[in-house]
Amino acid sequence: MSDRDPRDVIKPRIRALKAYTLAPRTAPVKVNQNENPWDLPPALKEEVLERARAQPWSRYPAFIPADLCESLAGFAGWRADGILAGNGSNELIQVAFGCVVEAGVKVVLPEPTFTLYRQMVTVFGGDVIGVPMREDLSFDVDAMLAAAQAPDVKMIVVCSPNNPTGAGLDAVAVSRLLTAFDGLVVVDEAYHEFSGWSAVTLLPKHRNLVVLRTFSKAMGLAGVRFGCLLADPDLVTELDKARLPYNVGRLTQAAVQVAIEHYDDVLKPRIDRLVRFRDALTVRIGAIDGFDPVPTSANFFLVRSRWSPTDVCEAMYERGVLIRNVSAYPMLGEYFRVNVGTEDENEAVVSALTAIAQERT
Image (cartoon, rainbow, N blue to C red; front, side, top):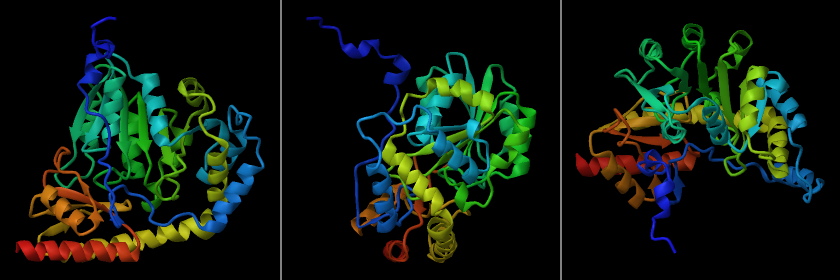
């Protein structure tokens, strides 16, 4: 038997990485993962199960879920042959990066942003050019475009609204990126339903645009795992070569179809309600001495804290409220993140933060 450590064959840059993970904590009030607090209604779950039961489980699903892509086309406002379905948008991030990033390739990322982007660039052998956001935590488009002029930059990636800052880009800003940069511009729209604008409207004019969507957040299907990629059909043909076969199971397809069909009568009213809750919650937290929420266009927001965010998060957890400590992110040493929950959950957040502030004042 060899005494060699089997990890020696792993790429050094991967061994140097810290795995993307989340501490396995739970609490009565869980507002740390930007989830929709309302589950799919039981009647719709039964509809999903009925459709799944009618399918042959011993057979693979369609290699390309054509019916689902047609539904997504009507729902998202883009052509079916320009849509790639995935097991969550994270899989499609991996697909897109895997097709572009290799040794010597550079990717421009605003920072702070979703940490999985940097992780995937590193795994595939590329390098990140990080562009700090402005002091108010908004995107610095000029700086991103300047960074993109460096040699071997093939991709700009923006999350809009951005996780964890909540900042969004508008049509003018995204159009500037698309026009001034020859590589791919990836716009991750995991939270676009809360912002009121989508980059999908720019797809007909820009062949270098890639839009990512997920059903995990606003659509309330985080446990089902589904996302989609929208882009020029010729580009989708190439990206599809990196997709694993049969990646979207029958149950997931049924759930997505039901969600699309009931978007207007069930899901959209919930999204609108969360936006109202968000606006009210930021005002209430802003009225607590020592806490300063950051404006957002998502279903979550940052809060600048007079006290250590780590200490505040621990104190919240002791009170049964789980929020996200983001103080290790660039520029966010004084911040924690809260996502919008139900009325009772939001009340618990306000009550706990008020008690913590009173104890420390």
